[in-house]
Amino acid sequence: MNCYETLFVVKPTLTEQEIASQVTKIKDILAREGAELIATDDMGMRRLAYAVEKQTRGYYTVLYYKAEGSKIAEIERNLRINEDIIKFLTVKYSTKKEMAQFDKMVASIGKGKKESATKEKEAAAQETVAQEA
Image (cartoon, rainbow, N blue to C red; front, side):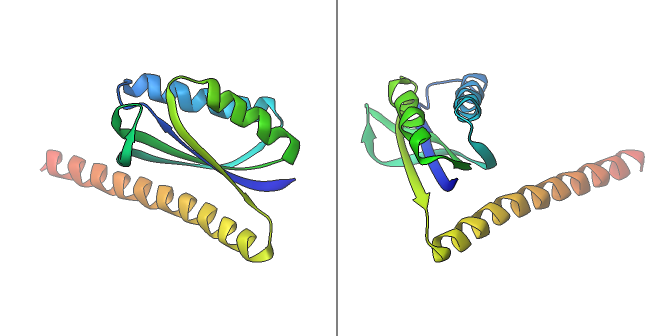
């Protein structure tokens, strides 16, 4: 099994629920194809470098996973036929140096989520203390 990173951009005209549905749909395709999802990085709404399908913004999501090389064609086919996805890119990590970078990126995603969750808990605790006072 090889390590892959797939970045895709969803149309900005969709609601938050529709965007979440599109991300879930892609994750389901990965699971159906036998890929092992390692991490997901929701980068959020960002400005595109150039207009794509008359859109200047898009919702970016990056999926890090392990899969057989033969399954990538089917995953990309599903991304290509989805009308709500305006761009996508799949990168394969194969050398030791690339694998080290892959592991580093996956670790930073997990670390970032833990830090943000800790900050949210601290903010909630401070709010309850302020309300009690």
